[in-house]
Length: 234
Length: 234
Image (tube, rainbow over all chains, first blue to last red; front, side, top):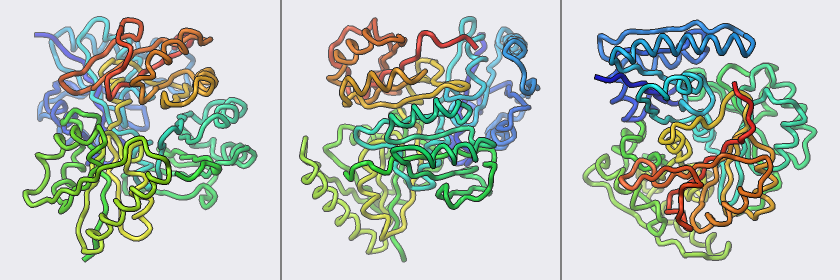
């Protein structure tokens, strides 16, 4: 009897964007672990709840907010120790993740600590990037295009230098960085067309060209999709 | 009675990585259109077949191989005309795509031609990128990392210049470009760790560090995942 850690991508927010594999694996889990202070946690919780076995136990961890690296590492050590006890007792522990478990998010540090000692598997999921481009019906990349994914938390000079090298881009973690992203994009040569997609696949979904979006803070779960204006027609 | 064009992401190759929404929409389709000469078509076909209604008709198009842009445009005009007839007759036409419909692939030019005239929707799918990182249990991107997606078809100078700007990358369409990619990566500073993932989620799945992979041509449906060696520990 061996335990197993399963990172489970639950998709971008629409409960119908769960995969058949995620549904099957959720139904096998004896323990469901999550970082309760993560803003994605309640969304993921609503998505997985209908698929869990009746007896599944919850393990919820409170992450320190805006903590230094050392504090964050100590937190993840503790999370891994606690999940490790369940795995050592032979239980299957699911770690549901909004989007995909290995595309940003908090499963990485948990897996890094536990995979050397216990069986670990990952169920990939549909990302917010894919969901946003589907909702906007906007071709993300084609042919020889490069696609760049960048967090808005990078400094202006980094963002500008990287964006100048690409045909298409997605900017994640926009939130309070929205006014800065607007200024940066307005001054960028070559220019990009930009769209904002918020809370895609939920009742609060909002999609707009960036120039038509007037708020100065993007809602949680927002991203920008960018496409070079000068791209040749194909 | 209005027709509808539905681009349906069927995931990276594992039939269990279909989403619940893809299963539901497939069951509503009256016509299934595909580019039969596309090497992804038989894989997508096997995945969708069990979910189609008994009476669903197939529309398969033979794309010209290695054709010039004008010939390719004429081909897509013809595809759009033929699908447009079905839509004008009020039918629901599904266009299944391996991975995600708007992340490379052939749905883009079909949608561009038909979406101005007919209702069109897109069901996003799990990409090969997500499936490869899950199979390798390799964190694709974390924290402030940028992630760059590049087709191996770009010239060496472009690939090298862009890779120097990123922490993580995925290289698609590797195929016969594998020896060139090896040389390029061997000479790149800063250096990347590299893995190859082929036919992920199928019976022929193969995963390896790039240095342990001896073939000179990568199988169809291969990609490289790259991570900067010098990334600071987090």
